[in-house]
Amino acid sequence: MQISAELPSSVLPGKPTADIGTGVAFFDFDGTLIHGDSLLMFIGEVIGHRRAKLAFMDALRSGLHRHVRRRGPGVDFPGSVKTILLRRTLRGVPVADALAAADRLVHRIRWHKPLVETLKTHRREGRRVVIATGALDIYMPSLLRGLDIDDLLATGLEVVDGTLTGRLSTGNCVRLDKAARVRAWIAEHGPCGETWGYGNRPSDLPMLALLDRRVVVKI
Image 1 (cartoon, rainbow, N blue to C red):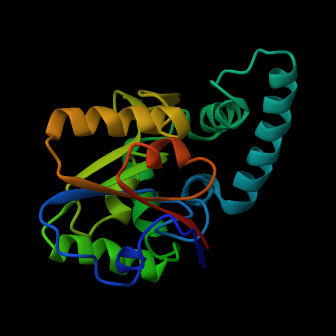
Image 2: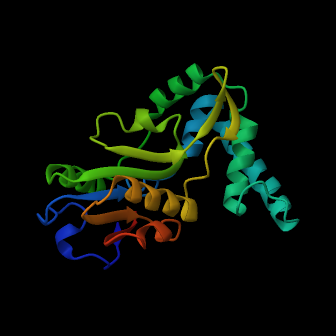
């Protein structure tokens, strides 16, 4: 694990944070609190892991083709790939099946233990903890079960009549959209006191730039 020198050592992952009163800590999820990316793992639990990998490669090719023609369905190339992948793999899946897949996923993720301990340290110090992630809101509550979290900012997945449509119901909570969501959360729930942020480079830099103390984590 590599950590940038953007924070005093007193608040590096795995070490107690200074007791400076109330505040709020924002944590990215994929590549920060856990190793790897949870979305493809979740899709694998829904449709099978081999099919999920093939679907991702197909979405990658399709997204690149559309991006070159400036017809991508997302705000950027990664967003287009994600949009295509979700439509092709999750459309028509019953919510009950998706929730069951989320429960199975709990046993597959690998936690980044230093960052989990940092999260718990913030809670012991009386600070609020918010998860801000591009992961889907359909499975994140299952993965966060047992952690003391105040709020979750995630990418919403549309549900109609108890079935997933494969379309997003919110913006894709990454990069600039994540920063906007965090800024809005602070405005709604403030004053927040001092703020902390934990994420990875480069996707979380817009969010981290909003916060007083920030850690860039590379697992």
